Length: 152
Image (cartoon, rainbow, N blue to C red; front, side, top):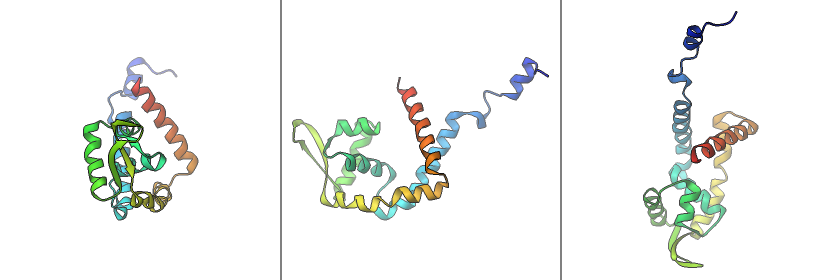
């Protein structure tokens, strides 16, 4: 039996909170970032600082502009993160070796050594989420598509 249009509208409430992608993403984001807090705390990092370090462990040095692009962060948000990481001795900021007009961020030896401890982070997150690697890869792919769609 086919649903009448009024019945179909009641069945699919477009304004139901639990049906909103934005709500699910916001709650999931807060909860996942909170999950990282006790894992990163012994390393002396906040989640945003951890993201900066991940970018630098991938490629270093990077200009502040490159870091901002990689992390989708504005300079006003990135600058205090970099100052704090510099204050605790994990990064240095100075002129870029290939472009002295650009400010470069580089890892210190301590920052490079911290990478070894950081190798313990992903397995702990995976365990706490209780999801398989395949599920997490699928989720990452879907979220990457969402990010791409919102940038167009």
